Length: 320
Image (cartoon, rainbow, N blue to C red; front, top):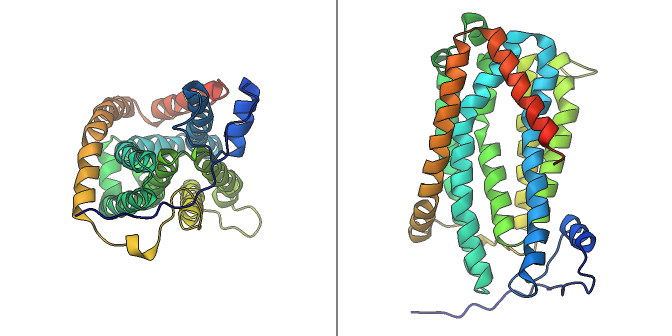
């Protein structure tokens, strides 16, 4: 039985008369409510791509910032960040895989002029992300010291880094939700919001990081654990801000109370769409984890040197 759902009224801004590259850049950074199914395809791709590239750059800044401040605590602290980040790549893989399915489903519903269907798909994606995050979080908090040991951490690194790993793995919901909600916005054609969410999250992390690591002002001195707390607070704040925009009336994705129910059919479709992408990500992640495990056999100094080196390379490539 089919039903007709009134199409949500969303103001669509026509493409500007000025088709220059710079006007596209300005539109991309400012945010656009254009209908991407109309107008030049090349311009639409550019307007969507610029915020997405900047968003990925901002995601890289989290690890670069953590290593920069933590490096002042010594090789064991940097080794802790490197080993924990290698374990978090599994979370990133799951987050990116689920994001592929969420983006695809939301984009299809938006293209079909079905905002209610897009909101339903978005809600189910968030529910699935919360379930995955809860399972990973519980396992991470319980087994963090064991996982560090399996990754080749020395006793000193395990003693120093267990709390850091527990906070990062236990707070993985901030990562999953950040990826998922931003993917929902991108699927709806609002990539600028996703970009701004990462700006906010990074700004909080950069300010809080040194305060909590070194105990500046009224903040407690938490050492390497402070970096995990700052990063999790930054990402969590970004995720909450992004979620608040989903609840804002008149947005491209407008979630209401009626959408907050489990729909097994949509969940199953989302899992199927995400499965292949997640598997591909996990295969690449496996090689990264294996490399880190091998490096850990050479001691904390070798692992710290590699961790700093790879972050420096990433940071150097960000402007391009």
